[in-house]
Image 1 (tube, rainbow, N blue to C red):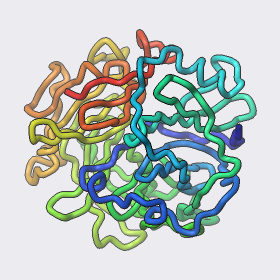
Image 2 (cartoon, rainbow, N blue to C red):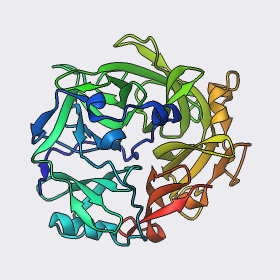
Image 3 (cartoon, rainbow, N blue to C red):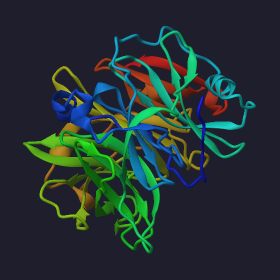
Length: 385
C-alpha cells in the first residue's frame, strides 16, 4: 500500500467529467495510443486531486501540487461487473482500508471505469497530509491502488518562476487530446490545458486563458475556474463545455487556437446563482442527447431548491447549438419549478449526490450523502431517466 504525502492545496470538488459522445466512439483503445515513453516505478505524486478513467484502463490523475497530469496504466480493462448492491458507510470503509481513524479521511473525487464497473476514489488523509487512490469492486470490497511500481507518464502544466498553477479542477480524455481545467496566478487565471495524445512523458501542455460571461453576475469574468466539463463535438468542430460556480454552462472552441491565446466562451444556459457544479457527462434517450450535472448549493440556507443542498439537472444538448439566445440572453432555469424552460429538468435521482459518474447509457454511479450527512455516504447505481 503506497500513500502519497503532499501539501494540500485548494481543489474544487468537481467530479471527474465524462467523455463526450465523439470521444467515447473514436478514442483509441490501446495503451500505446494513449501513453508514450512509459516509466515504471513510483510516479512521485505530490497530490492526487481530480481523476478520470479513460480507454484501455488508463487513469488520469491531476497532481495539482506537482503542476502536472499523470496517466497510469492500471490494467483494469474488464470484464464488466457492476456493483452488486449499495455500499453503506463509504467513508468509514475508506478510512479502514487506509488504516486511518474515522473522520480523518475525505473523498476528493470519484471516477468510474465503464469497462469493468470498478469505482475509483481519490482520497486525502489529514494525518500526515497523505493522498491515495482507493478502489471499490463489484462485491463492495475496498482496496488501495498500489502506485509503488506503476506504469505511468507525467506531463507538466506550463508555469515558471512567476506563473504558478494553483489548482486543477478537472481532467478528461477527448478525441485527440487530454483536456484539463484549472487556475494559475495570472490576471487571466482561468485556464484550459491541452495535452496531445499520446501523452508523452516529460512533455509540457499548452494553456489557454478563458473569458466567460457569468449570466447571474451580469459581467464577463476571467478568474473563476471551470468547475466541471466535457469534451464535445459539433458539426466536426471541437469544443469544451464547462460549468462555473453561480452557474453558467458555456462552450469554448478548441480548434486552431495557439498556445497562450485567450478563448472567449459562449454561455448558453444559466442554472442559478449560489451553486457550485461538481460532475458532468452526457447520455442519449430516445434519440435525444442530454447533459447531466450535479451541483452543491452553497446558498442552501438562504434559498433551497429541494430537500438537499446537493442536487442536479439534465439539460438538452440542443442548447449548445443556440446562436442567438446566449450570454446576456442565455436560457435561465426556472428556480421555482422542477422543470423549465423546456429541456431543463431537476433529477430526483441526484438529490444528495456528492459525486456522480456515468456507468453506461442507462445507469450512473452515485455517491450520496444519506439524509444530507456528508459523513454518512452511500455508493449505489441509479438509472438514468
